Length: 318
Ligand SMILES: [Zn+2]
View 1: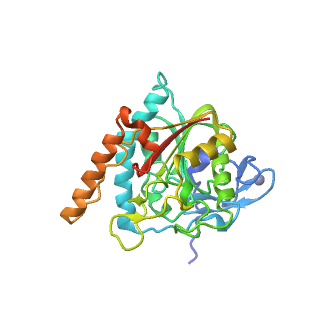
View 2: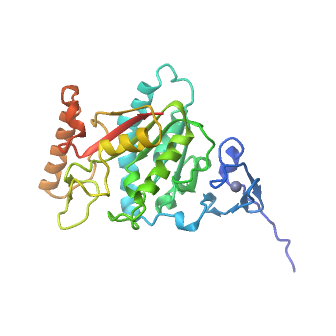
View 3: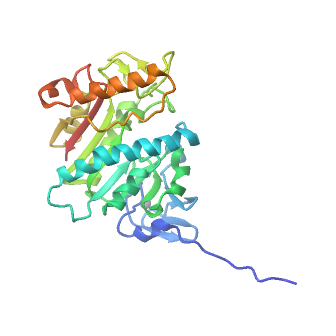
């Protein structure tokens, strides 16, 4: 006996915001749902879905092959939630006073596991996240699947001047590298400028951009572990991989035309949640926390751009 086959069409969650938010990453025109894909209304490029998340990439080579493994990604969820609760959400309230009741348009550019987008949304904001790495498997856990897309920061799938606040956590150093390494490609400067120009393009005039990253001038980098030591990466203060505060000023102000930059205090950003088994590891984390709190004091703010500070949090006014 033949049974009638039921065809179930699942509409991907992001379609909810298709007209207001998402754009073709190549020509920035509107997208429409065409069968099981998205299609640009102007250039006709087609974009597939991967596990219900749109793949808004101009080129499949725009994916980033970062390290992803479940235990590490779940740890990143906790780290990211800590930073949101203790740093980013309070910062937003300070940056946009009086607008607490208004939903702000926020982009997490390189959102990784996407827990930040979830928390911004829970706080009543109109937040979106993109990432082109391998941690997107964890997006299945998010309560805001309609707000996440696989895309590359060098070609953002959003309209001009759309966001009030655009931020990235240590993303620029990983633009223009050879795979997920600290080695840069020949055209890394051009790739980083393209990334910055896109951040600026989608931010409204008067809006803010935030980029946090390890400081190039500090030879001790505890955030990109590679090499013989278990807790830090030692490097030259002239290496091309990381950025200094002056590099941020050059990229965002001189090259991309933003108005102003400022280095923010670091206290509250890192929770140092890694459960180290060794006493030495725990002690090192505590000392780093104390060091960050000390450099966050306003009377020491001049030292924030110096080699004494391993972590820069740069606020940029568009
Ligand atoms: Zn197009």
